[in-house]
Image (cartoon, rainbow, N blue to C red; front, side):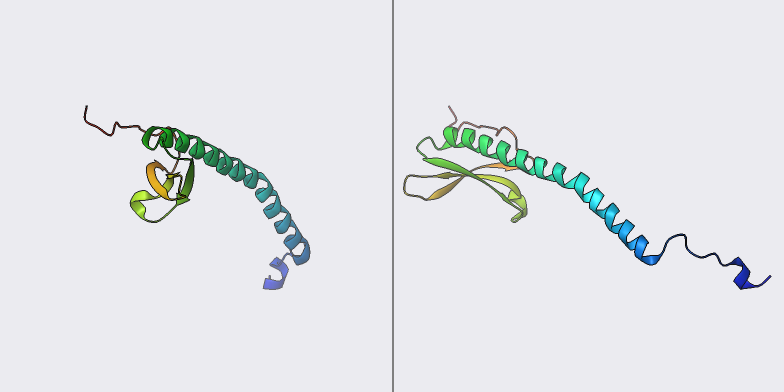
Length: 111
């Protein structure tokens, strides 16, 4: 028995395998991408709503609020809330975390 007798040709041609790999990759992206888009949209909506609540509590004179996502600095990584004042200056209001939720509203005074 020689080595040539044990050789079996591939089931599909290289071109067909490439087309199949591309099709599988496209199908996986079609399954995963909508979930990522819906998750991001939900986080944006939740962060904006939580930011409005925090701004109304901590900066009642603000004209609007703005929620932004940032990675750096690490201690403030995630969603952050800023109040936009009447002269277009922004002040930091609350840190909402990586998964935004209702902010913990702590009274500013001790009484």
